Length: 115
Image (cartoon, rainbow, N blue to C red; front, side, top):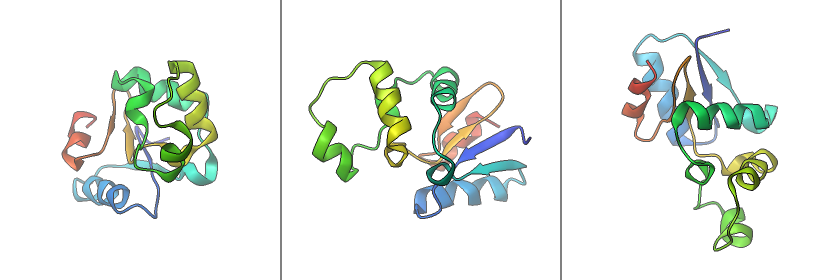
């Protein structure tokens, strides 16, 4: 397994830029197309632990699903984790996970914090 894992959505330009950035630095990494494989509670919790973020900070608030069903509602951290696992499209991307740290690759320079 590669030391660096990237949760990637191939249809997202920002996510593709993250992969290009890693490639430009000749970094070995594993791509995880989380929309196909799904998003487990374990991986979400790993991201939270390594990024020091709250679950709501991983949520793409511009997604239609968020606007229709979640905006303005109060959920606790465990509920947000469940929402993310059930609706992986809501995850901000790319998420880059290293051995000790994880970041959202927006802007792409954030990825340097994991390298």
